[in-house]
Image (tube, rainbow, N blue to C red; front, side, top):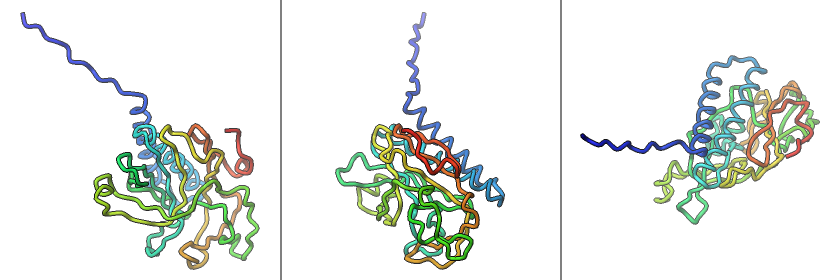
Length: 240
């Protein structure tokens, strides 16, 4: 009688499951963007979910690859002034684990926020309320905890090893360490419904917001998860 040995079955690890969940969440929210109409409230809600999913994906990738990751948000268009990426384009990158130099690898192609929705940095001097030159926005309600500088991104690890194919651009970024913990605990990421009111100054568009309450966002927790929040909850940070 022929003796058949049972082949061992490999179970999914918790890290792999987290990575899959993060990827599915991003895909689901990106599909939601394409189905969202022009309603400002719906677009803001979609932006909030998309942003939160992107951050959770970065956290999952950090744990899966055991290397730091960042969520990048283009701060201005630079030479690519027609791209519309400024304050609207988000991308996850991870640090090359095989290089001692700081090399950031693109984990995905990036995602645009819905039309008419922008990431709002803490510096509000370039923004206009009601198009009347009134800059008296409540800075406590807008994004903080970020760094703003040039980031060099490689399309893949092979390109990084060959030192080719890199793209350098100015960006705000939020970082997770190799354990998926946030380096910016308590920071708030805020999106607002607005429009471009004037040509870009130094590459950053001047935006007009007709309604200071038309904002949504979330807080980053130390463990890497997020807490969704609307305008009324964006002025006081939660306990980490």
